[in-house]
Image 1 (cartoon, rainbow, N blue to C red):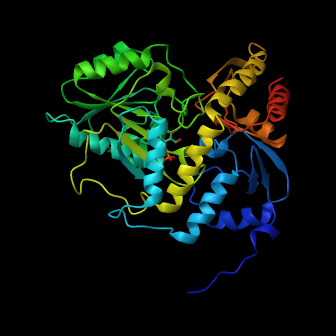
Image 2: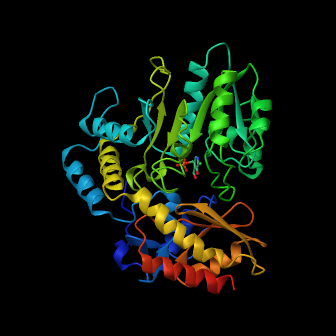
Length: 400
Ligand SMILES: Cc1ncc(COP(=O)(O)O)c(C=O)c1O
């Protein structure tokens, strides 16, 4: 065994880093040229020192912004005490995180299984649904346009064929209903349906908001037809849409809820929360790193910071202002619609978003595409007013 050598990151340029990374490239991502090496609040910096406004938020996982002092302190303290702990023992940080989660989640979801990512929380939900649904119910209903992750189980629920066709066969027994259409969902459910999976707002397919009352109707249908309702709040959760979780808007409590992304301000963690009577039987599920004390410490600190700093309300207020200003671009020939909730904003274009995204990045604004025609604008919830003004300016220039 040998060290391959190399410079300390602080001395490396974008080009140095890209040269090394490209030697080990998996091929799964179309990489951008620069290397991001530092972040603070709503800003990130590349290895050559260029500053960017962050409207990607690490794929929605840094709602708290970069390097939040309470999260840094929690990680530092926990790193000196205990980093890993076998899951069959209780742990103080895991306990603290679960209490913090139950303080912000819909009431009654007290069965918690901690994992390391969003897709793993969906896997856990699929397994729990099959175990707990009873009556031989094994099938699932998901929605057209839905995204639930990329492991083989979660992919079976994800709609986009480009993500999954090459690795079929996947989990059988999945039917798709039209998103936002409760009648279509009811039609797809039958006596073999274990669970319905859906996002309260579809993120990956382009920030698609269902009609008012949809979640309430879906809740009623699932209860009446004996199917479990699983809400995937992985992208919508932890304040992004203006509430701690989007399902709270219509006061809908799912049977199972999947969360991840911003749960620990960017550390890898996720959770499946379920009704207290829906339990795994021993050995039905497990995870080496689930309940990891370091991630749990960061998670509890992140949730407390979200509550104390009233970040969901901040997202609602700043999001409304930013969306209002972006709406001035509607109908200019390039922008068809600006839509969103809180700081989960999508700009729907008449055209593919790629070249506008590139132009924005060139001007120092990180944004990402979603679906076929949408630019996603997801700043951290701590985003400053003057940063929002700059976001509007740059997008105005790029989409002129
Ligand atoms: C709604 C939704 N579900 C599941 C996932 C998968 O999460 P992860 O990438 O953490 O596995 C994502 C990721 O973008 C998502 O947006």
